[in-house]
Length: 415
Image 1 (cartoon, rainbow, N blue to C red):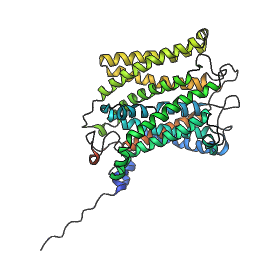
Image 2: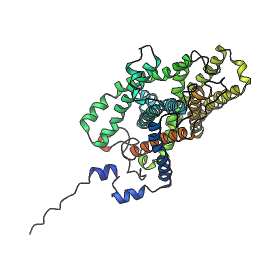
Image 3: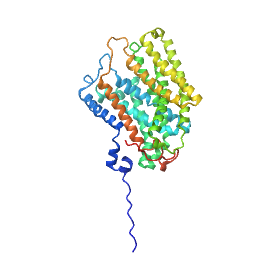
Image 4: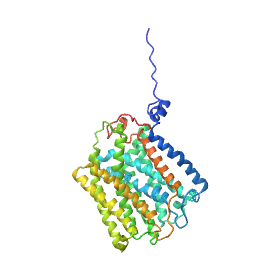
């Protein structure tokens, strides 16, 4: 008597794609880690704080005032978040436009970081607006000569471009080959748009401070601040990619295991670019002091702080980038990358918060709720990055769409 064929049960999409091949109880147990416990504690407090802020307004949750309308939700969440997301257009242009395809393994993580960075920046901006539902006014009711008009449209357009670029690995994950092919062919055009929009709004953010020459400290104010903002965005993009690739290839080791990617070589290449751009930026900062006749301010407390930013977080990491790249010492390049990220973040905070209204007796100090909300948004961004990388072909490529990386094994990190 012939044997009946055994029915083959195909694994469900939810179990394979969302639960990483585990049963629901096993997946929930895998989430019980110290890192997830800390993240949960932050979110348990931070998410209700966000709801509370929208319910009761800015006055009850922030230390902002009529004289100091900008706080860390603008200086850190918005301006710092956007500049640290500059790796998306920097590496995208390197691979898609300049043809340096050896940097392709770090292109997708850079684009994902940029996309999430812009989303968190937009959420931070919404929290900062007294009437967040009026955010559309900046795009439709301002004159076309307004800096905010350009910033609003460019941020919206670039976020859309990043979303479209992110859909390439998303559609691979979903197995949608036809629409994936369309987006893949459009990558070069999307990269061109990303460079255009990024160049416009990164510099336009600096142009905002041209409207406040008497409020911003002379050491930081210059008529060329919009150029400084754009160049520092390139530095932030390079440095952030160095830091992100260093962390990702350690934390998500199982994603890259078996791939023939020399991350150290790519890092040294980024170090060469970082050295050149940071040297140029350092001398431009000095030129800004000369043009503004601000030498005398270097003997003040603000002058000492300016030197900390300019020498400690621009000149020193530029030397580390140069020496590390020349001697093949990857550790020095990565240290320079960390310093570069911190330095650009410090610059944005100095310009928008610390050195703003520098001559007023009342100084802005953020409330604990402002700080916690900022930490919450950063935590959400990190968790989203981990969740996506563990599931989608970001550090690896799906074998069905193989064209660069060798396929890696399943991730062992739950998220």
